[in-house]
Length: 494
Image (cartoon, rainbow, N blue to C red; front, top):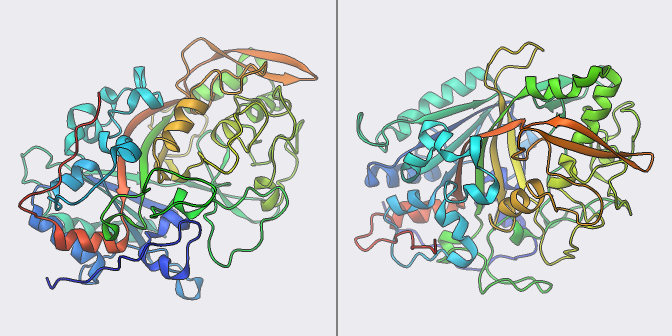
């Protein structure tokens, strides 16, 4: 393969520019909203074949190519979108040159991997990596190298493009019977609901809540001014690796892996498989003889939204008709310091505090938000406990896994001291690692109401940390891997 010259011009850390879009993997910036997806996890067994595979994905010579953030002509969706992530051990397996630098101070979580971070994010007890799906569990952690995420519009397209993709990476994986020869495939088929009044289609998770409502918007050249109560656009460097420092925040010397063609315009992802115990959730709602209205009221308190997505800060007593899209996202928690109408443990408040009172004020220095590209897997729940696995799987992205994904999980989702004060927060009842026999407290008419019998509704079944490199970086790895003096994952403090 002829050697290419690579641009070494640092990109703007504050905004994404039009020329950046063809270099950034598409789902970092924009959700595809494609209803069928399949995630492949495999091990690199043949270095040369792996480098050829990366080259084919970015040169147009392969059956499929990596999808960038470049706008689709005429806004018409393609038949498929494809993205790639590599774990630290996957980068090591490519035998990249020794001048690669991934700063342990910034990226120690990525270098250590998801299994090493289990206690930090609450993956203990039933969530422990010993219990994860085979390909991702503790025993196989070092053999998790590559994650491919394929998105399609139809189930037929998913099968067709999956077959082509398997043929492309078949030479890469170890031979049958060798360690790591197995390939994990995980299908995601979100439930699409049609609003009977508006005809609008939206996603729903198995707990019955509307999904995919609010993600950070990365600041980009040409975006419209922020609306009243809309969260500010997020500086580019928080979701896309950029060299340099914004004027209002001085991170460590650089906020990206090096050299620049390898590190720029990428990001990191915590890929998660989260099994949801829907029968247990519904049993908790209906306990103590609650009628349907009381069950829906309790469900709204657990989430901070009614199941039709209306925030309880707008509709404290009943769901009402679904609000306009902008109202579903453009709100905050005002001066509420006890959790009425939205409890401090409510899932939406825990995963996006919106600068509410009692949460440590962070100003413009650090934003702990994450970009979520995940959807429901498994069959729809019909009200009968059929023992079928169902849940949520996908990517939770950010430049700093420690300051974004791990912070949210450890300091917000699983922390009983999240707000301080007297708000009686508990932990996130929908996502947290809830011990059996716990309780949930919300406020009503100025007084706390405690509901007993809360248990764990979500169990982690798998996870991995990966680097989502730019198109330039994938080409750079294809041409510079296989080095005789390769980069290795540095030893980290225990």
